[in-house]
Length: 467
Image (cartoon, rainbow, N blue to C red):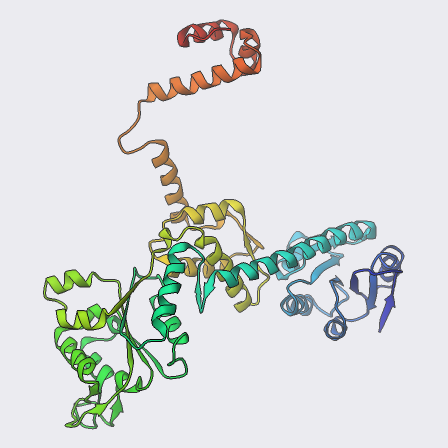
């Protein structure tokens, strides 16, 4: 059964779920005059109500809303997943902190202990609704910022990334071979997918091959395909990745790991636009666009004879260089927000956030594994963390150690410092500040620095300071 109490004028709509008549009466007396209040007697009635009208807050009797704690926890998670903006409050008759923390971890914003003071509930509700309104506005601003700071599936608004987006846009409509270069974890395959998404082959096959992941004994058959009986395990004919990319795009990641023999075969395919399966005497015409990627120094590989020079020039028609994350100012915060949202949603968890200290440490981190390292870290923090806020103490020890080491490096540079000179500089700064504060009165300055007046006079003589 649902009962509505509507105050005069516009008011936030809330729902209270309880079978306790005394609670219903107290809620009506205090809350119904301020909020558009709907009383529900069962948790099963909440979702149908949310489907009919816009409800801003739900207050759950955690003992009577459902028949067991597990069912109530399930309801809380369902409501939180249904609407991340919904204000969820609860009250319980249990005085154990463990019981309340389970509900708070599931998504209850604040848990009151019975007997409930509904004047307090009203105050907490007002504050939570104000926070809700501010969060909705901030989220809208973040969505606008994310739209400005993304390109296809690539995230980042720094100047180096905008140059990458511009290069991709320019090359996408053509059919030239592209070589995407960058450190491991910078998102080379995402760049390749962005080129395809912006070009005329967007609806055609996109075949991705990690050359480094395939054993040397298999990679030729994987790339070129084979006829039945071509070798011992060739029980049937099969097209290779190059043939499968016909009409579309072939992405060869870590192309620098290919052996010289395979490089020669690939060069023939690129020059003649034909592919020949292992064990076949005929060739097939093929039309595909090649996008290659590497984190190796291909010029050095050419110099040492590990990579064919003619193939290098064939694939390196247009190079696109992805910057490492440490050279993308401002992008760490954008990526953190993106991955937090993605993995909280994927794991059906309330949205978590980073506190300012944790964000500062992560923004200063060098990220040797680039975006992949950051994404893996966020996924781990989302799954393993129990609270809504990720603090510095939750970060991996190695990142915290690197942050401390960096601060120490700033404090003591490699060439070292003069300890006596640094201490003298600090002493002088404190003496000057204390004298300014006290209008040059040495006794008062001594009191401010908590030293005796005789020592103050000695230090003033030492540094030539006049009172």
